[in-house]
Length: 492
Image (tube, rainbow, N blue to C red; front, side):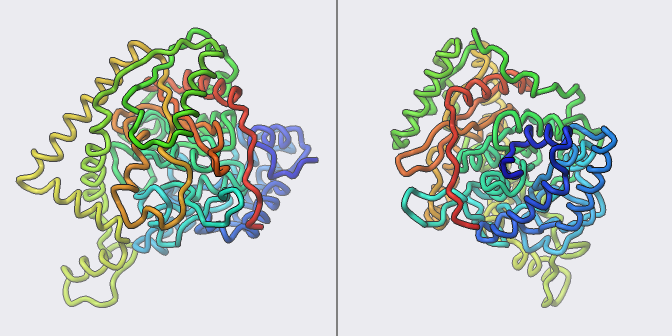
C-alpha cells in the first residue's frame, strides 16, 4: 500500500471508513514525519499524546461504523486558533505559555467531525507578515528548493507553518487564516490549495484577533477536493461571533466536477503589474486558455481602484491591530516584564519585550491613523475607499461569475531577501488584499513551475457566499493544470 502520509485527505477518509487503515496508524505515520522534519520548523507545539488519544477514540467509532465526516484524519492547527489545554502563542513571545481554557469554534467543529490534532503550526507573529520570518519561534522553511540549490526559501506567510506542513506531508491538511492573503500567498509558494471563504462563513470566535473586519479562517490542503472537505467541516454559523452569517453550509465536495460550461471568467487588466515576472504573465495566460477550453467565456473587466487596495489595507489593518493588541499588557496573561517601577512602565516594558519589530511597527502605524486629527484624514477615508472597492467588485460580478488572477507576484524567495524592506514585503499581498477588503471568497490553486522549479499559483475570486461556483472553477483549473510536482525530500 502507498505510504499512509501520501494519501490525500479524501483517500485517507475513505480508507479509514473502509477499515483499510486505522487512525492510530495514520497518526503515528504523521508524527514520525514531523519528528524527521524539525529542519522545516513548521510546528511550535507537537501534541503526540493527545493525537494518539484522539486517534484511538476515532478508531473505536470507526469500528462500530460510526464517526464524523473526517473521522480519524490527522490535521495541523495554525497557532492562532485557541485550543483547550494546549499552548496558543500566535507566534509571539507575549503569548508564550498561554494555555486557553476554551476551544475556538473552527477547531471545535473539526473535532466534532472526528479530526485528530497533531499540534500547533508556526506562523508570523499575530499573523503579521508574508514570509513567516516575524515568528518569535524562528522562520518556517519552505520544503521547495530552487533546482540545484539549497538556499532556505520562505513558505509564505502568515500561514507558513500550515503551507509547509501540508506540502511536506506532515499532516493531511491544516487550518489557516487570511487577513490580506495569508492563506492564498503561502499556498501559491508551496504548491498547495488555499481557500479564503467569504467573510462570515467561518466563525472567528477563539481565533487570536489581528484585524477583525478582515480576518477569516480557511483551509490549506493538498488538492481542491481536500480543501472542499475541510471547509465544509470548518464553516457554519456561530452565535458567539456577531459577524458569523446564519446560512447553511453547502456540500462543497458535491460541486466538484460539475460542468463550468458557460461560466463567465473575468480578467482584470489592473492586475498586470510593471515588472511582474514573464512566467507569471504566461501562467495567467495559460489559466485563461484552460478555462476557455473548459467552455468558459472570458470577459475583460476593469477594477481601477485596485491600485488603492494596499494603501487602504495598510491603514485599516494596523488600525484594527492597534485596538485589538491593546489587551496584551502583562496584567492577566502572557509575558510580563521582570523590571518595572510602576504600572505604566510594566505595560511599556512588557509590550516592548513581548512584541516583535513588525508587530510594533503596525501598532505604531495603527495608533497614528486612529489618533485625534488623523482619524478623518486616514482611517475614515480608507474605509470610504474600501466601500468603493466592494462596489467595484459588485459591478464587475454583473459581467462575470468568477475572477481569475495570479495568486502572488513572485515564486518563493529566499529568507532575508525582503525582510529589511517592509514595502517590498507588503507588495507580496498585492493580488490578494482586495478580496479581504471586499469580504469575498478567494482561492489559490497550484498551476505550474517557474524556470527555477518553484511553484506558482492562480487565484479565483467569487461573489459573496458563492464558494460552490469557486470550487467548480478551482476543480476545472486543477484538472487542466494537471500539476503533479512535489518537493524533493531533503529534510528527513
